[in-house]
Image (tube, rainbow, N blue to C red; front, side, top):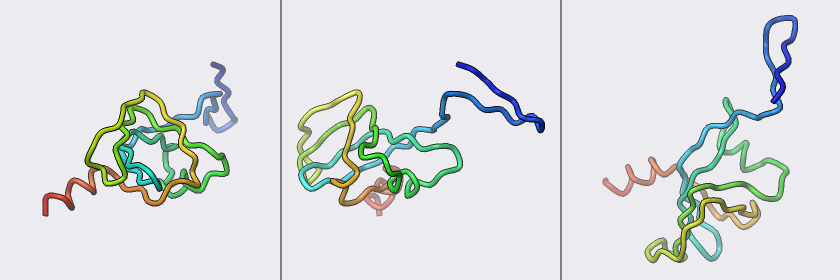
Length: 99
């Protein structure tokens, strides 16, 4: 990995720093619980609107369409952005479920 500094001391690397965010994703055929990777100071919406076709989800658990029966688990899942019906932060879903 190389690091470059500009005249103001800001550094640039070949690696894009991202934070992992636990999410629930509903597709046409499944519900997915996993970790979405978001660039620092970006919104989930910014990641969803990225021009790349596929989005990386790690530590994914794939359920049936209703989210009840677990189908399988994967360490890495590449999901086509066009197949996403809705996406929510897992922490917000848990708060709503407790109400």
